[in-house]
Length: 259
Length: 334
Image 1 (cartoon, helix red, strand yellow):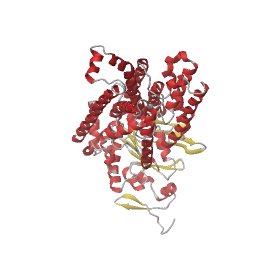
Image 2 (cartoon, helix red, strand yellow):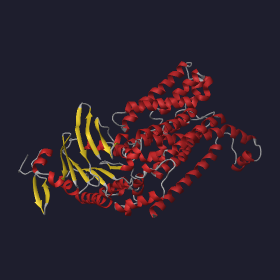
Image 3 (cartoon, chains in turn purple, brown):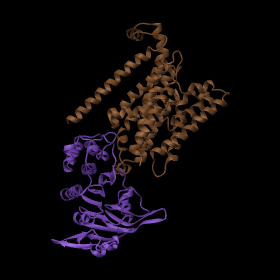
Image 4 (cartoon, helix red, strand yellow):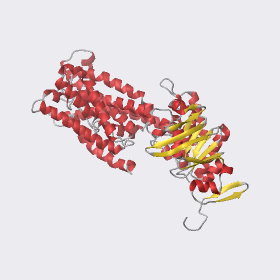
């Protein structure tokens, strides 16, 4: 996926300022940046939920604005940050919604769809609770069910908007491991937004650092994340420690007291 | 597996029970009034030999009963569809002014172009669409907030109801025969009205069945639905049109009846859940039952006088609406 000179304006405010980038196939790319930097806007532009003011986004050299919603939904699946569903919908039914792009007035769910739904429920670990209503699930299980719905779309690309928000650390790790597994075992291209810099560092191949509508850094995470780049993106001094060749960002203020 | 099977069985039993109750109510309604007739005599009179009493019942009571059932089904499904489209548990075609809009257009047609009487349903549909567009555009403010739709709907409803009454005065000081014929009752209906209603209602209900999957998807976030390849706005327009059609058609024949589209879907959801594949057929049965029940009660309660169905429904529905409003504050308020 290719982003070319992309700008987005909301009213008079320029939110994205002519950014260009390349999302590598089969890799995990994470977008980080402070609140209001335009990362959500970029996410919505890449998923066809917003239209660019200038420039475009290309999927295998085709501008995504020329791809129909239905066709796009067979190539790109999205897990949004905030999800609602009626209390009595079962896990199985929710995941089955993911087959919608393949259905039409004439074609209803068949054996192939059923197999995919079963497969998804096993991969995401919600098979045991497939007949339970979503409302009875824990936060982590809920999130896995929604990821399951996206997986049932059988796409090569998966977008996730802050998949770990609202979850405690146990479920956060569980979800990130699932994402890693999807990338490793099924070679899915993954693009996500994360708030936690350490999680971004350790679970992705590439990081895009955004600030005020511009890409500040992009590249292999170990090389680009440093004290100075973090300061540039988040405007805060953070200490980086090394442990067994891996970098960890200490997400607490270096100085005692207030910044 | 066990859980779903048990669930399915429970729902089937509820369906069968409701169907039996509806048939029972049908015979009670047939036997309500001056002439009484036994079940066997009725069947004999209908299918085997001529019977004067059965003939009278067939010509006077049957159309009324069938119309009550058809309009009940139409209003209930209309409510289900509006609630799905607006993500609003309080949406009801009567409350948000759709029925009043339809009624206003129908009254205009009957008053000024009586020769076009046969096109009443079509005109009512145009009125319903007009009211629907008004409600949508006036309450749209970067999204449709449930409460704002109700507030704007109440205003639109008041506007059209006022206009209908104004027309009544223009027509001759007191309500004229034409306006009385169209406003709010199932009294004095003939087989002609049944024929007019049946085709449209069946068409609307079949269309309703065609959009069950879309209704189910709309309960997810709009963004999520879009990313499943569904044109959300297109789906909204389609489902709204079907809902307006169903509400307008029944209004054209029986006048505006509020609260059916509110009360029935809610009770139906308690019994069979939120899946529209089951909810819509259930709402058809329950809607028929509810309006026929209200009509029958209206016929007996102050016999030999009659209370119009719309009034019975308002008396039942008003408190129910307040109850829902208070309950939904817990779920939807912030």
